[in-house]
Amino acid sequence: MIQRSIFRSSRALSSRVQSQSAAAAFRQQSPFLTRPSTSAPSISRTASRWYSDAAEAKQEQASNGTEAKTNGDAQPAANAAETEKLRTELEAKNKEVVDLKDKYLRSVADFRNLQERTKREIASAKDFALSRFAKDLVESVDNLDRALLTVPAASLRPENKDLVTLHDGLKMTETILMQTLKKHGLERFDPSVEKERFDPNVHEAVFMAPQQGKEDGTVFFTQQKGFLLNGRVLRAAKVGVVKNE
Image (cartoon, rainbow, N blue to C red; front, side, top):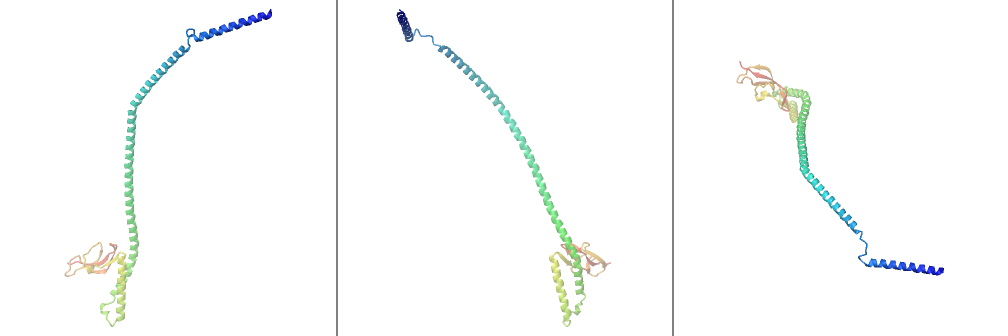
């Protein structure tokens, strides 16, 4: 009894499962019994999203255009400001160059003046040192000249051989000495030999006397010979000057 009940229940359950499987297969094969697709909402959402992206792109493009226009308007102003800045800097540099050139030229001129002044001072110091030595030396030259003048010309005879030899030796010594002094700028002059006119710059008048056949102001006698050192008077010649009444 129990077995029959179980058998009947299993058959009923089996037939129910088969009927449900057949119905499901039939629904899958029939296009009219298919459930409405749920893709429509997704399509609408996709379209909505595409529309939103296009609007954002258009808005971004408009913003970029406005920004480019603003940058384009600001570019000439920036270029003008930069040009003005460069012009100002160039003018400042040019002014600085002019100032530096002026300072350079002044420095060169000062340096050259210093060189010339230094040369003159060195030459002056050299001449001064030489002049002191020359002043002490001319006294010895005068003594040598006086020694030669003390020998009368009448005494210079062949029989006075020793005297003639001594006189010639002194004369030769004087000649060599004067040549050596001349090499160093020291020269002796005798105004009476050249018949020079009196010059207060190089002559010192000791006395004045009348002289026939000679013009007034002419040097006719030299008491002491003069000396020049490098063209300047080291010692004026002491002379006698003609003055006819």
